Image 1 (cartoon, helix red, strand yellow):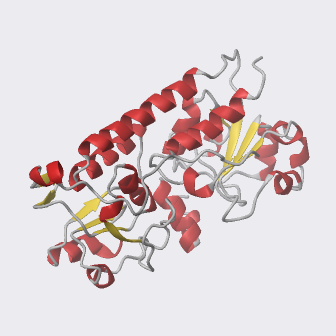
Image 2 (cartoon, one colour; image 1 turned 180 degrees about the vertical axis):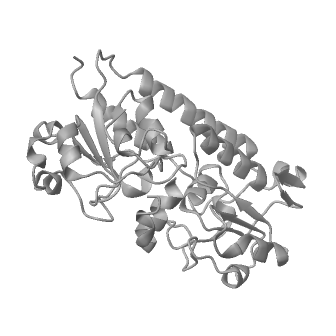
Image 3 (cartoon, helix red, strand yellow; image 1 turned 90 degrees about the vertical axis):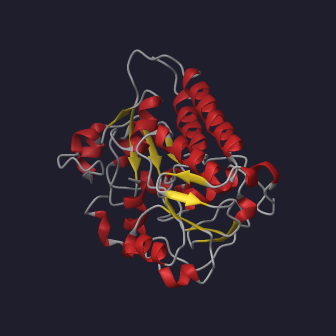
Length: 313
């Protein structure tokens, strides 16, 4: 899951436990300064989503999930967000604080006087602590499927008074993804790929959320065979990777670990890999590649663009 990857990079030791064309297109999002339209939304309350009931439209939302932050702005609730965690960085101008989503502190969160807190996980038993303080909490865990992502968008839209806009965003995502996949050339033999989480050769398998996006594009994952423990996040060996000779290499460690086509080519033995010899090493934006919000479309666009440039056999 995405959360495992975030924790592994932020806290280091959790990696072993679970876990080049740059992206140019960015999803269109709401201006951070935009304000919600109160009229019809206010009449829809109280609203219940799962175990969360809001008596009125929230106007002091605290988001401790970078993905949730992106979703809130995408559905039109940006003007209601008053604080975000230290990892939320999109769209530009979000009200970033030193609050942590990995190690949330209930007292620090409560000091923001929120009328809704959005989290991706329940670290430090923070949900119970906030609930005891009468602060509504919505959990938006890492998506397992695209449908999970669409559902979270709609749930956040309903909670914040932007149900129609959220439904429209989800539908646009579906339509964009369907078109990107439909426009791919047909191949008699699927292309193979390696997706790199970090330079220690941790990867993802086809059964993960990220892996499923590559499957949509008709690609075969060379990491699947290495997942002997069934975690979905195997660590490959350099020898096995060179032997698997992937057609494409996707780097999701360009920001965290400064990896690029040149650093990959310089690795011992890697200069003979097809992806390297044919300049088919794709540098992804780490943030886009590790979140499950509206910019999933940009990730799939990067995948399909790289795939489409390779002549069909």
